[in-house]
Length: 207
Image 1 (cartoon, one colour):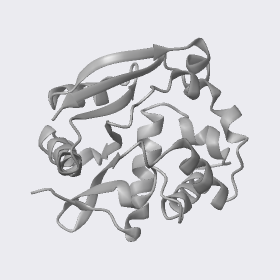
Image 2 (tube, one colour; image 1 turned 90 degrees about the horizontal axis):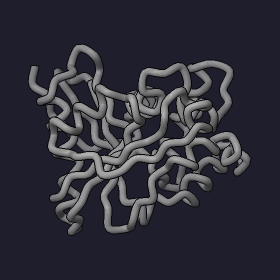
Image 3 (cartoon, one colour; image 1 turned 120 degrees about the vertical axis):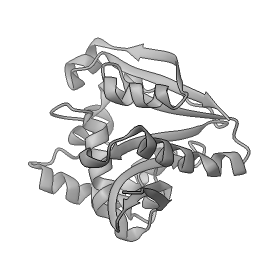
């Protein structure tokens, strides 16, 4: 069935929260937001994410940064596309504070912060790519990624980057098939201890 892509709205918190959770875990038991929220179960964690998605502060997790893949009236995938000069670390901290999470979360994600790539303000960022199992195809991923890069072109960006955990082979291969290449990586024993992966790689495509 044909897949189309549209901008997300405030009513898309379910598919967006699924995309954030699944993408950040990347096939592992825990991911970044497990440490941020320290929720007792997935239902509670998704509740936190759904609140984060609609805060008045527009962090990179805000619904306005997402594109949704739709097939037969069903939301079947999502991707986040944002400008790091706007969706800063401070914006995320402020959005988390809105829903009751103080800045002590920085200590809980220390392993991630050690490996997080440094991104300049001339770069468009993609994150949280997720497609439901029965709709996974390179055509669906291509449609999501290409639509999410259109605003980058309109705003004059010339490079698009994404971050993938080292060892997250499926996601790495998807981006490579779409023309992205690995430009660097950061590894940390502490990251591996926390997230059971060696670190984070950065992939880029030029527009």
